[in-house]
Length: 264
Image (cartoon, rainbow, N blue to C red; front, side, top):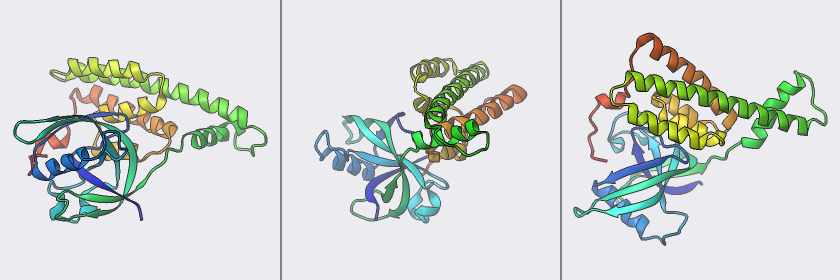
């Protein structure tokens, strides 16, 4: 069995290290906040799982396994501000990724819970193994661990630099085409500068900031190796830049044209 955690479905996925502010005023999620706040302040379990909704809004009215994507990310509480009406304004930060094993719908607690397994990053082994193959030029590797690790690091830095440049160009294109996007462009540029020396942070920044489909975002969230995630983002950014330049329009998320049935 996996670990049982509270679940909070949203219209889009959350990524590790990404800040997620929320306004909580639906009764079941008020209960969730009370349950989390009842834990000691530095308890490691002061979090809930965020999963993207695949279809519909009231996921309890359909089979949750069909309504939700199976890869999610924890949202760890960083700031909680109770409101006069009994609701909360909260700030969370994306934490660990997980896979849904089962979704539990019950009356107490009234919010969804999920049995999950935690997903580990594959960083070192995947980066070295992937680049070692190119070092060997298709032949067997003998005693090349140090060379492979060196090439892997160089490859990662080049890939991250390329994605950073593509993302900078992408943000500029979106800002030029989208009304009111200048503030977002400045914020994205600041965040990009902060993540420039951290390929993993850069990959999550691009995944969360680019105007991608939920399916694209989910694929990036599910990818456990930074090098492969950056490679996928390089392809996606080139695709999106081509569309922006040829169509001359900023894509709008589908959620913009839907009306949720609940307030949270």
